[in-house]
Image (cartoon, rainbow, N blue to C red):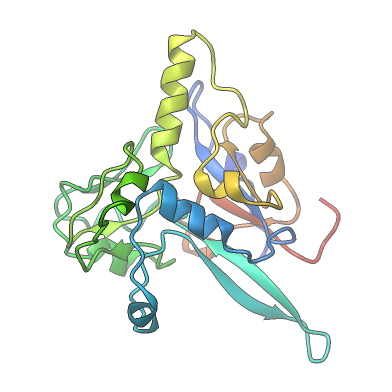
Amino acid sequence: MAKAAKTSVEETPPEEGVRRWGMVIDLDRCTGCQACVVACHAENNVPVVGEEESARGRSMHWIRVERYWEGEYPNVKARFMPLLCQQCTQAPCEPVCPVFATYHTPEGLNAQVYNRCIGVRYCANNCPYKVRTFNWFRPQFPEPLDQQLNPDVTTRSRGIIEKCTFCVQRIRRVELDAGAEGRDVHDGEIQPACAQSCPSSALVFGDLNDPDSRVSQLARSRRAFRLLDFLGTDPAVIYLKGGETNV
């Protein structure tokens, strides 16, 4: 397990009035139920490739749950780690894209412009977390399955890179509604599909630049660490180590 990291607020001083969307994942709470994976597929129109193609390593998940073992036999425990785009501040995927299909938003998201992507996969090769997916086949949604597609999310064509964006369509919807009502976005008001569906509330989403937000407070826990933090990518996804009860 990686060493505990400094908090995102300490490493990246916040600019006044600028949000930095982030997520804290408590590995002590994750049961490996895969509800987040199913919710992500449904929310973002992610196609299902089937058992045969999955056996060839051609899965299309934007979030996956990795399993690892902790302890020595016979006192071995199964642990689970949801793995999604880490939304890095210093993202290795961004400078290698020849058509600027992936870029950094002012709110800290690694965005992906699907109609600009030409599928060279440089970004996927440069991603140390291997969380970018190449859409290698043309998805089929025959009737009546086409009725369950989310109209807020485009159905991607074959030959491009796809990935998690913290359900940016939900972020934008809440921001627009809050702006129309002349108020700020409330903490916890935005819920990506994975966080909303988690039965154990292992995933918490919010503004890391807000010191009073729940996600920011959890990020300051002594259990907090970032995946492969020695690479200096400064991810916006922070994990809480399992096996410890005190924060």
